[in-house]
Structures are given as C-alpha cells and as structure tokens.
Image 1 (cartoon, rainbow, N blue to C red):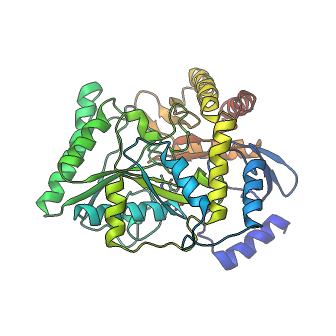
Image 2 (cartoon, protein in one colour):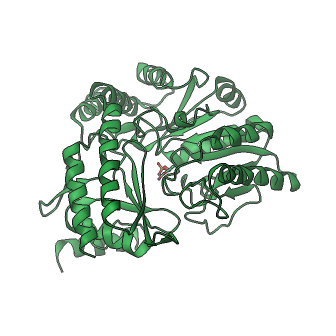
Image 3 (cartoon, rainbow, N blue to C red):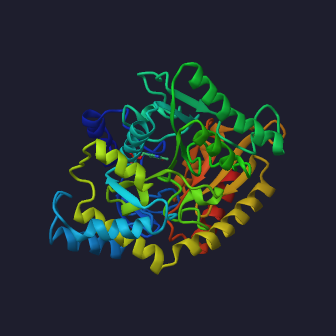
Length: 427
Ligand SMILES: Cc1ncc(COP(=O)(O)O)c(C=O)c1O
C-alpha cells in the first residue's frame, strides 16, 4: 500500500466514501501557482478546471492581502470596519445602477438561500422556477432547486424544474424561432401549473451560463421573454453568478449582461475570494432594505475584514492584469482550437465557449446526437494521466467541461489542445 492508498483509507474512515473525489485515480495535490498544480510526487498538472482560484492559484497579491489583514484584525460585521464598506461599494459599482446593495455570506449555497428568503418575504410567494440538471447548493431549500443531485427529501410542491434552453439538443425536434417559443412556453406552463395549485411565484433562479446543464447556447430573446413572464406573475429574477460571474465570460463582468436583462437579485461565490470562502447577494435596494427591515440577518463569518481583503484583491487583479480581455482573446483562441479538433474527430458534436469557459459535446453519432458519457469519462481520466485537468458535465455527463483560472494563456491552450488531440486519437 502506497502513501496515496493509505491517505485514501484514512479519509474513507473519517470523511466517508461518499465525499466526492475527482478522477478514477484521485489526485493528492500539495501546491499550486497560477494555472499549475503539483502532486505529492512532484508531478505538475495544467489546471484547466478550477474556477475558484479565479486569478490563479496562490496569486501573490491576494495572498499578501489575506496575510496582512489576518495579522492586523479579524472580527465580525457587528463592528464598523472600512473593508466591507469599500468592498461593497466597489462590487456594486460593477452592476447596473439598480443593483445597489450587497449582503455578504460565506458560500454560494448561503447566497441562494438568502436570495430565496428575500424573494419569499418580498413577494409573499413560495413558488420557484429552476432548470433541470441545475446545481445551486446544499441547504434544504436550495437542494430543491435543480435536479442534478435529486434530494432524498424529495421536491416540494412549490418547485417547477423546466428544460434548460439549448440550441444544440433542442426540444421536440424544433429549431430557430419555434424552439425559442417552446422554451419560453416551459416557463409559461410552470407558472400556470403553480397557479393551478394556488402557489404564488416567488422567483425564477437560474445559473447565467447554465454550467451544470452543459453550458448550452441560449436562443436570442429567450431570457427577455421569460423574465417578462416571471415579473408579470409577481416573481423575481435571481441570477446565480457563482459560475458566470467576475468576468468569466470575458465580454461582461456578469453572465446575465449577455442577455441584456437586469436581474432583481444576483448571487455569487466561488471565484469571489480566489479560494477564501466569501460569497454574496447583490440586489435592488428596495428588496434588500425591505427584507432586512423585516428579518434580522447576521452571519458570523461573512464580510469579515480578511474575507473582504481577499475579495477586494481579486477585483484588483482582474483590473490590473486585464483578465476579462484575456478571457476574450484566449477564449476565442481555445474555441477555434476545439473547433479544429471537432473537424478531425466526429465524436465531438458541438463546441461551445463563453469567455474562459468551454464545453465540447461528445456524441456516438453526429446525426442522432446520442450522448457519449463513457467517452467523456475516458477522456478526462486520460487527460489527467497526461497532466491536464478538466472535467465533464451535462444531463448525460457527456460534455467536456474546461474552465481554467482566468490567467490561462495561449501557450497553456496549446498544451491543452495538443493533449486532447492525443487523447482523442488514442481511442
Ligand atoms: C451555479 C452554482 N450555484 C451555487 C453553487 C453552490 O456554491 P457553494 O458550493 O459555495 O455552496 C454552485 C456550486 O457548485 C454552483 O455551481
């Protein structure tokens, strides 16, 4: 038994076998820097998966900000501190002016939980529309929203999970305008079905890049039309930016901007502190103020000076290193490279990219589009063995998920593409 097996056994004993691990051969990582990770044997991996180390693993500016603040003061928000105020000002300044207030929490799950509470209290409704195969977090209320990991408690009568929009797989064999209409109809039907049960709509909560759903392309006017329906039914539009936010999509700071529709509430997490657990809700002032007038909200760790220093440092690096521009340049380069591989290998049915976030649909047959989850599994494990980390997503686990730290360059892209070429050829 080697050291990895020994550590695995110890982990199974105290953490359990069901705590998920990536890859058939789990990785024992000991160090990170930029887009690179090293395992305990000193082997180096190109990280093309992790979005939490948004500006790169162990970015010195973020590390220094955390260390300096941790050595000075760390308290809760029940004391005045400039850190949270300055950060909330800087954060809200990146949104439409209507989204002018921020509440900080510690995880994406908490952010979505809080956004749901605000929606319930401010609309008087209970109903929530979400998409099939979505993931939004692990609290009791949030585990109900999305079906990727169905909660053993079951779904409450107030949940309606609709088909996520997807121009590749479509719905009922439709395309173009008819497909958009059919997806909009999903929301209309969900609202009607809630009304039939006398459940008032509180919110539609969606991931702005539909990450767990497989990064599908969305029909052009879909979002404007469904948000109109939600508003007419008295509900709020909650944009989950845990995956799509902080410039991930390159052309925008926030994923929802691509649709030209401003949300009522926005939730965020993962990349916000580059690995430090900080998350938040940004929303309309009337909603945040109205909710906090009615509910005392306090969160011991949220918005502490160290978290705010980390989060502020992430915004600094995004600006100083022009990482949104990098996501556009390198993103377009990667999509072109993946497109060339799709030209060579018919197992790639479609390539999709949103800034520094890429997906490749693996199919058994391009005509039938039958998903090939087994091939996706083979590829990600073979890539791992060759030192490149990616993963897979989607309803059939058949979509390669490539989502590197934002400091990914064309040279890194070349290495990833060459390795993927080798792995696809080695089938
Ligand atoms: C879109 C989305 N929302 C929310 C969450 C939950 O965030 P956390 O794990 O920080 O609670 C996740 C986590 O994967 C996510 O992908």
